[in-house]
Image (cartoon, rainbow, N blue to C red; front, top):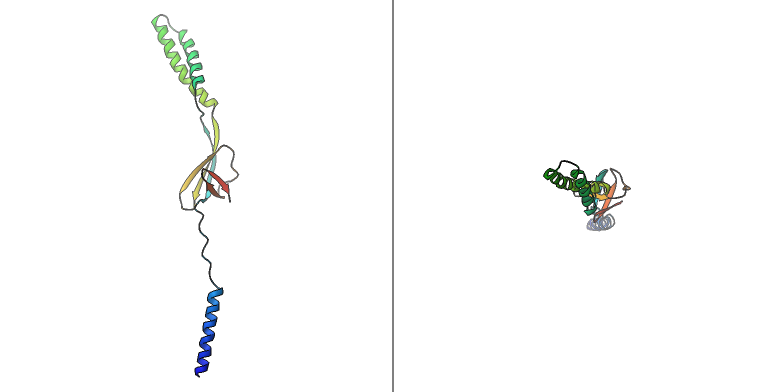
Length: 141
């Protein structure tokens, strides 16, 4: 009886050791901290830089137009006002001429935060795709 009990215990121990050794459950894969899901992709127009060329060109044209108005001290005031207004308008025109279109991608990251990424060319991903961020750029997974 003692021998049967001893054999049973040894068999149980051997089976438990085998099962524990060969049936290990692997740990879940770590979440990618720099990965996320694209929520939105859209184009936005951004104004470019103004500069001296727009300001000077606009001021000259505005001054010439202002000089055509009135006489005496009124003409001087109109010339100065035209130059100031022309400089402002010329700068805004230059900003519009130098404008560019950028693509904005909104991504919900694995940690739940939402980040936006900009690029000049149309991206290769669409809403719902998984991406990985690398600094200020994105890559498809």
